[in-house]
Amino acid sequence: VMVDFYFSYRSPYSYFILPRVINLKAQGITINFKLVYPLAIRQPSFFKGKNFITYFSHKILDMRSVAKQHAMPFFIPKPDPIKQNIFTGKVNEHQPYIYDLCHLGQQGHNEGVGIELAYEISSMIFGTKKGWNEEQNLIKACKKVGLDYLELSKNAKMNEKDLVKQIEQNQHDQKEAGHHGVPGLVYKDHYYFGQDKFNEFKQALINDNLLKA
Image 1 (cartoon, rainbow, N blue to C red):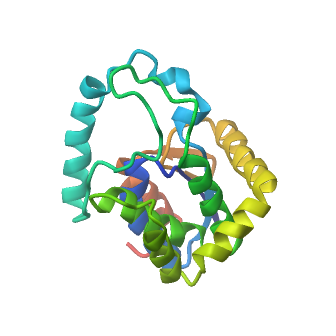
Image 2: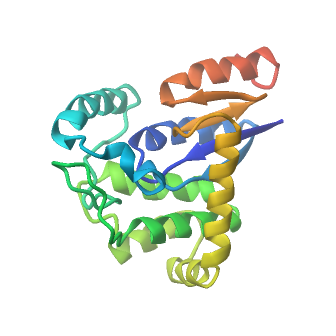
């Protein structure tokens, strides 16, 4: 039985769901990790004219409460993986972090630890106050999943064209599955969107005797 898991490195809700998805994997559920570019890259017009301060203020309250519920540390990312004007929502043309980050993550997936690396890096992006992008922190995160950051980084650069194709294929699959939101879990053609749908998704696995209640 295969479960597709759609994930974005800019989504705090993707970060919140990771420990639960990793736990399912530990219980023998096959998780097909599908990394996608954030909405700001795929559809920058979505944020057009959205004043981040008003748009995000209620979201941040929700994020803080979800973090508390799951006993996970949570901070506003510094730097934000996406460069964007917080007053107008306009996405910058120059993006210094997100492509390298996604390609590193996809290369990690190709080396067998996509979801585990996503957890380590997301825990720095959303679970520490600042500096997730500093080399020594990325070295530590990679080491925790048995990878050498410099080697991984080099391979990601070398395989960039293929990695872009793989991520775009994931985005195509996601559209076919009927959604563009993350985190998303797809089981038996049903798309469970958002970390708050996790229990409903898990119940479907229990009902099919794939997990113990």
